[in-house]
Length: 260
Image 1 (cartoon, rainbow, N blue to C red):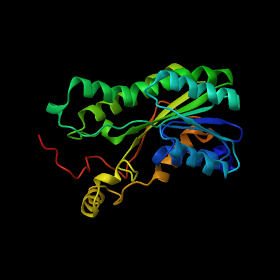
Image 2: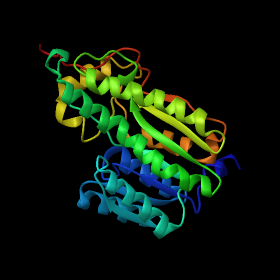
Image 3: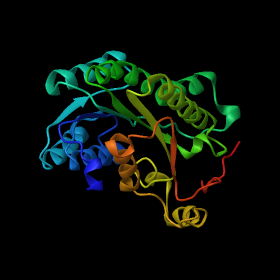
């Protein structure tokens, strides 16, 4: 059956930022199809909750408290996965985000920190993980990027530039690592997570929905299903691609004006 191509029984996936939102949804989606999951997040309470829910799917699930900006903690994350579960088949790089700030108030330090948090962390996690994928015949990396990386979004010069860089890093790694390791990314549009919801009142949400061709904001499972596709054998002939999961967005639907 065609749905068998989505099965990942016995495979091992690392998901960063797995305590909530897209990371949590991705971890549970992978667990639903049989993957054992290593869930990483900075907040212990959140990652433990994700792990408990994953275990209810009948798979092994391991929590790791991890700040991905700290290389030694990333090394511990990868080592824990290999020691506890024996292999690594999938990496979901789901850490990122930067608060909006006008370009003329964006310092070099702020800009560089945005790049490190959104791009360098994903590169280091990939660099540490890929050798283990190669030992078992290959694997898949899914980078969570943003529609901001391709659509001009005033006030987000640091974040948007970093996400654009992540997209091209995805392409370069995909070509260098093919055919053993597939590398793809998802350019996520406005999705209802705990990162976005604090910005939205009822009127702001309605404005964003009106500016989105499909007339609604994204939900976590809209992204998690794409992660599952790109991580599983269902996408065995896909690499170096940026999937735009954004409700059809071709222009900014950010409803706020950035002040000077």
